[in-house]
Picture 1 (spheres, rainbow, N blue to C red):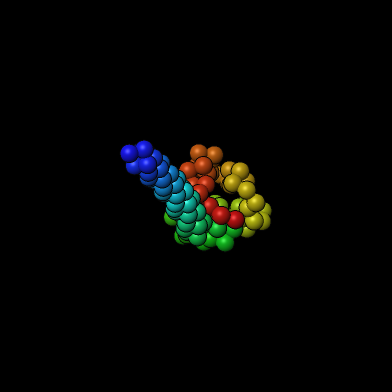
Picture 2: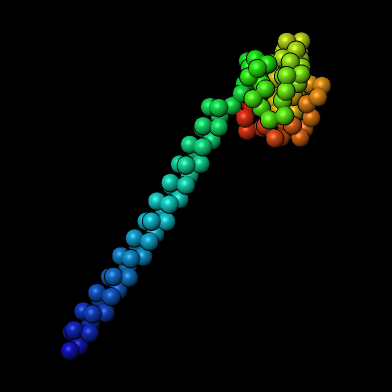
Length: 110
């Protein structure tokens, strides 16, 4: 009887151990999948980003709040002053403010 109780207790402990190990492994897998998904999303966003130093006025118009006039102003500023080096520099363009830049920050590259 004592041997039976000991074996039962041992099997229960092993069952708990393996179920806990399995749960921990699932949590690690979930974290890895989430991180991979986030990196993939960032890569897609970067791939779809508009390079303000190379984009035409028409391409710049695909950014939120950038119409024909602002797009042309960005191109003219770039031609006159050289390539943009930062998001903050975009605010130097007439009609482009910090709010507009922050709305499009993820879609802009240099």
